Length: 580
Image 1 (cartoon, rainbow, N blue to C red):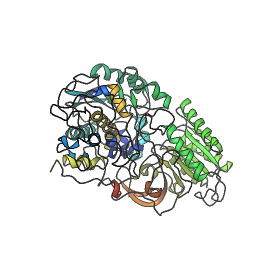
Image 2: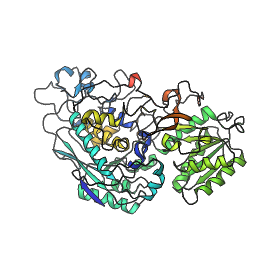
Image 3: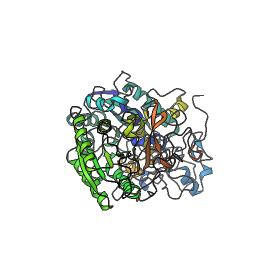
Image 4: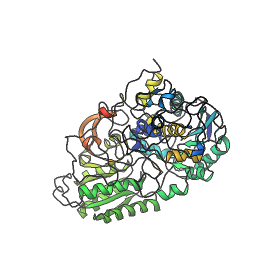
């Protein structure tokens, strides 16, 4: 274990998540960096459906207004709240606020609402890791020499270092502290590089213990990619973490209020997949399969990665049960394990079973590597089914899709939590960083992986107000909801009426794509190539219960692979760069 202060600039290897570049373990939130900051501002002006996220704290979380201010309000006070109170013109919002929009004057359409500039006593040490001057945040980074992650990410590896990652984060913290309201406090950033592999439970627990004992942080961001031991230990030690692990709604509830995620849970993604299948595919001909199968009524198989043991089987049971409740039969249930030594043999056997059973449509709840073996084996056995991606992380990306057998992947489509992409030279993390600093981010390609957690943190800090502790902070997150869009996922937490259980995960909606094997363009790592996901209806997104019944797969009209510029209603204003 190698802790380092924010001043340390020693060259390090890529972290477990960072090496996946912009399509990392939280790939479903590639666009989150552009939208999560709206969380502190509530809905768009005139959008009555979006909650006012500035109503985030209990009455005792605020402090009195500064001397001389109009009475009747307390910190935190948003521009929207000030407007409602009729006192917006009595407050000097400062140059960081665009008073025409009531939002921060930054080139981000999803910029948060302005918060009243703070004066007075912030209460000092109001919570863990909080003083009158600082808020301590620890960022977990994995080691470079991780054979598990290297195997998974070999095709799309990004060689940006931990030092570059930390430098990028520090640059964004400077941006936050310039434009966001932290009530007299600054963020004390500590990087922590682990020696443990992505699935090393023992080291993960030891890391969590050392972080809590040595640094006493307010929050930890990030964690090992393939074990929840890190999150378990932090929760047991009553320390908050963001993007450090995940599981079922029950798993999160048992660790309340300490663990929060950005991506949708596996169970939530299933809800979208089942609704899509039942409304658009079931009982109809497999029209997107090869010639030998396209006239047959769809017959489904579920192929899923089973290395997770009991949890993998539970999720498979849940998927099949949900489909059956919707009137959809799963004819074959086919687990596999991601083992480099046996995956080709497993793929050969599974493909043979599906072909013999007359399966037309393969529901893929897979890792991103195995589809390469499955599709190559299908071509070898002259079998061309429909390949249905069930919101499977990384399988629903251009970077991985280009590595699959293109004869097969030309029949691929599915549900994804990813949003339709915009040319990264005109919108996104690096554009905002370059606007503020005048240069590209040191970790330009991978910053969309690690920055969303910090964006959520910054938004929640300024919406929480001076009295910062876990109760006020997590009460704030529970009110957050972003504005809907096509180039951004919709995120909310808490009880927004979307899910049956309390929601500790961010992304709520999803969209549908199909694979165009002949389309050129940039993948998620900004690499030119051929083969692109096409988002149906320009990437229109749906919440549970909203999915349409019309199948528009493999229809070019309205489909988008990459927006050259954001849609007009998602284009931010232009502001002068602080870097000149």
